[in-house]
Image 1 (cartoon, rainbow, N blue to C red):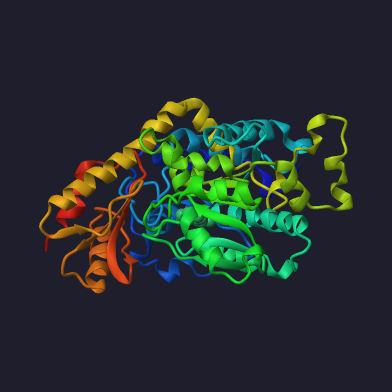
Image 2 (image 1 turned 120 degrees about the horizontal axis):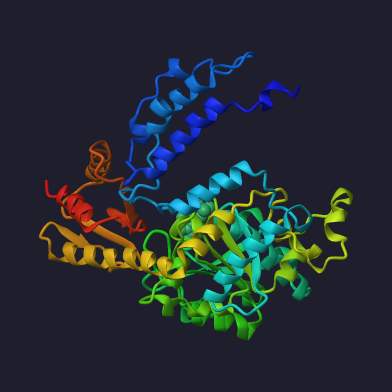
Length: 456
Ligand SMILES: Cc1ncc(COP(=O)(O)O)c(C=O)c1O
């Protein structure tokens, strides 16, 4: 007799599978309500107690009370922040991963995971134009990808330039880099040279001008470019910045957490050619590559260098590095700031293999095309104005005459009516409306509904 907690409950399993089947079959997934919904405290208080409770009852409590109080990020009506639109195949395979006890840490424990994840990573590296040998690991998200990559960049630069006081090394970034870049540099105790840009795009010219005016340009050891800013979808001058980095032997990191997916867009792919210069590059399959949370592809031009910086050393782990097998050295844990890790790349791998890369191309293109059609509608309207041209799949626009409060009410009202989840943002200090298209099932009709709701 094993421990009762590990008994298999067939009836509960049937209920859970039925729940999952129903969710997976939803077309479209409803938005639900997020924090607009009040969760009665008496339904939750005291649930945890020494003796367990009936599992089917708690599943029902989750279904009826907790699950609707979550805005479903995979609804095609979710257009706030950066949405997440996992394919059905990726969700199904996530369930396989959950049930299989897969530890994606090392070659010794899970070579089958490593082989599949590496296939997806090297495919992305190839699409990005990185040289053969480029590879890395799937980490939890863009923030962790940026932190891991910049840790490697900092240590490599310090080793290369012993003449610079290690506390003085700096990275050049633009003011529009994602907040996780500043946070990573803070954690790493590295200062940023924040480069002033023209029209929010970080270019080689802007970098050169900033360096020319800086008292210690020699301390700038790396450059961070953004391939698709979060607020506006702007792609930095990757070619110019990357070639500058190559010419001056600086670390070049490209944050494509959101926009890197547009490598799959036939109309926009050319904007990303400079990624071929990157020492490190991230793109989040959990954003625009249709995988479930949480999944960031972190790719290094030279993974060996990353391993030298990041691999954890401990006597109980020596066995992971000491095998006859030539692959023994390939442990995903060595390429990020983590040790134990979920095999989080597998749902993306399964979806990419089974749907094929052409499906990814058309799904990514759909969002860009919809953003452009939305821009046309806004330009034709007499009560809306574009704040700036749409970029990738992000549309920033204003309702003439609206205050910040009015945008807030509009956003809440749309969610209450289950029309869409939209969140206003700020542009040059002004509160404006922002739509991020991403889900291939977001339709023109949904856009019409949203724009119509701003008439009053
Ligand atoms: C450009 C960019 N970098 C990094 C991140 C952070 O990614 P995550 O939320 O997965 O940590 C985001 C998130 O939106 C992003 O847009």
